[in-house]
Amino acid sequence: MRHVLLCGWLGILTSAMLAVASGSGANSQPASGPSALDQDSKGWVDLLSGKDLQGWKRVPIPPDKTLNAKNPWSLADGGRTLHCDGVGVKEMFLHEHVRGDGIFHVEWRFQKVAAKTGYNSGVYVRTAADGTVWHQAQVAHLDKPPLLGDLFGETRVDGQMKHFQVLGQGSKLARPPGEWNTYEITCKGKTITVRVNGTVATTWDDCQVPRGHVGLQAEFFVIDFRNLKFKALP
Image (cartoon, rainbow, N blue to C red; front, top):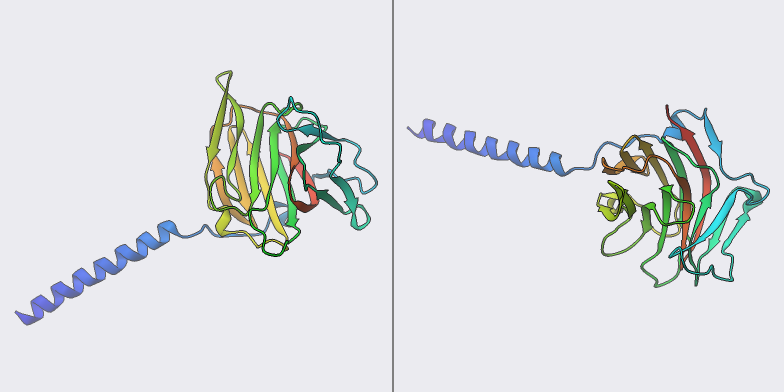
């Protein structure tokens, strides 16, 4: 009798342990890996010429607002880095070419400010030239959504303008202010996927806007960008 009871309790304990392990696996972060750029360096278009910012356009936020007299965008490090002094400025910086399916690779780093929180910026895909339609991967160290790596914006659904927000786990994958982070935003059909430092953070499967501009955001903080590259997908 004692043997039967002992076996029964062992069976229950084992089942409970397996259930906990299964639950933990469901909530764990997906496996990370190298970026698409690291895996294959062929077929990428470099969006920084290294000489000037020709091909880039400042767009006010909101679109009907006048641009700030201060231009926050400049090249640094011999043209390898796009420097954004966004203090006092909120605007888009869009590349001139309209792009469809593809991967937008961006590396970014906030200038760390002592005792400062709430760093904010963004990366755009499939965005209208005038900024009325926009899809942003959030670049921010904030306490409430949209958080780092989340997708949000003003999109078109069945011909009507609609605000959207898709939450992910990018804030768990980010490196702190002062360190470089890597985004790869893949647009394929109706699906937009954000990878943060090699790990899938956010996926949205219902983007009805098939094409648009890629770009960056100035939003009150100093931030640097590098390796701005786009690879078209068939």
